[in-house]
Image (cartoon, rainbow, N blue to C red; front, side):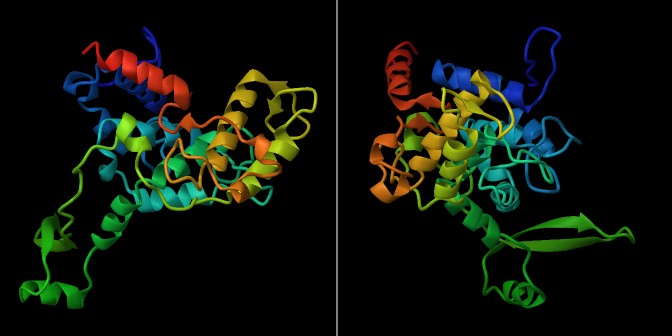
Length: 289
């Protein structure tokens, strides 16, 4: 099922996330809504590892968050190449301490959430990424052991240039796709430390993006606006809580730049909603199904 942003509007990963996240919050997410969405997002993951807005386009921070969050919500995140996705997002944090949205672009305060939020999500997916690493093609020695029955593996065949077929062996990932990691369950998952420099990101947000008269901006020299104010604050919250064991547990004092009174409200990492508002929505719509 391909999803449009509006009537006769564009179809892209952003539209998928908008529809899936709203359906998830309203507790109406079902197979008819999710059918084909995972296949489409897979086609949007690029050779770099990030996710583009549509197949064939360039990997982009906003679309990467939307694609990753959508795949989590429909419980198909194990289908993404998480190892290359981690590499791409992690290397978007620049010398200025903020995040860039695309390769070889300038940093921008709004990507504090789009990129930082993606890495915050991935903190809870590391076991899947580790399983994917274990599922990399075997070496010749490992293939020989597998043929002798000493290694459990899965395999598939691929065509060779001469028309014959070769069997490729992979370590079997028996747990791929099992278990739910959506909504309420997702924020209860214990996570490790951040995959980005969280204090450095807070420095960029507070020292480079913050406007003393109020609000936040893209970067020094730009004007403040509501869009960047929203996503700079969201990114600041994500970076502050990146050391927390769950989304609503308070972070240690050394995880917050400056005074602990700088600590913001936690946001739900999948929906970017203040956590208290998410709990109220979840309680309200869970009884209406």
